[in-house]
Image (cartoon, rainbow, N blue to C red; front, top):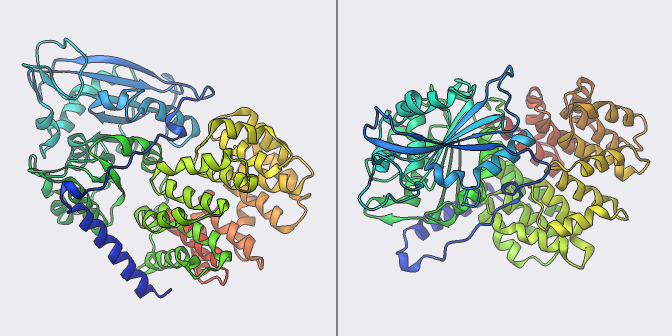
Length: 574
């Protein structure tokens, strides 16, 4: 499909999105409800942190106020360890610390720290100040009758006061008990609504304190001048910030401004200034439902490792063009292009274009009848930020027709979900279908299931070619350095070059030098499948030195090899 036509499609998508926001409240569609995924749930094998409650009534920055704050300390925190803990601060702490609320942050932190997707992190949940001598009740959204709240002054004001308040008052209290890093690259701040713009202001004013920020339905409107931020961003030298914004088309529209438009303006300004940012724009309202549902993937993105690859002028655009070509590649009815198109969708989402992916794939899912294809479509919609499609995968896995079971289990593993716990346990328990058994094991192993990890290692050691192939593929993502000897022992017995490549690529992902050398060699293989998997695993292995070879692979005659090369290059360039 010509790029000019794709540009026209994208223009009409953006125009339609903007016009839907501008509709009167009476014509708005009903807000979409986004369910929690597995990483917002407790798992018995995951160590749980502890939360303590505190009161602060000695403020000098905000004299006369009193407030609660909560401190989360993960189970992995070592007071005498050599490394200090990372830090994350949350405004409206009562909303984020609530285990049964819309965010369930302590549970999410437990899961992400256990999986290694976040460093050991102390979290501080701070409520806004109330003008009172004491707190007669727990702080919630509204102050009791006769008590004035200082929330808007603290959160909506565009200055450095709130950052100073944290720096000089709250954080020193926390540091009396816990060792916390002062490295701003290891400090993040988050908030909802006015707390969202507060997070941005704190990091904008004091990037020496915070360099990561997360805003849920942020109030980038004219409550106290916040609508000016998009223009300020465009005219200010880029600051060393990483920004995640979430909003929905059913957010507020009132005398202060239009929240969806304000957030879109922020995203546009950040894109213009080439910030490291993400913007997930759904169909939610002014609440924490969508932001809470995607909190695990938001935090994973915020705390990810950076490789700082600088693509030359035109190279990023070339990568995006390759992926967009792939996304639309199955439109001609060629079924052989379906899965490569799904892989291109993954690459676009990981590069920050999830909205484009959702707009393209959702209509296809509604009309798709093939359960295996429905798994691919639902998986990428979830990856792009819409957790409402997790149920599609869970239902297919639990269905009587086994046709889609393997694809459902594999897709749930890839997006770190369980879908249907009973069906997943059943899929793992059976061993007649080795693919289904191992994909279910992979999904369970994401959540520290030791039996599942043992099953994957057992498959690698077996004589079954499929067991070796899938076991190796999974250990490259789920294993650790203790698996390197296991993988090395299988190179000599790999029954064919492709399975040998799977083993070599997983060794590279786990840091084995010989595996890294083999991965580089495999990028030049005459087998297109080996080239494709090498390009994909180059990202898993963090092999940024292979960027020149990946750039050449953008011209590979094999579509999937091109898409995986483009995905990995954009991943390195974030």
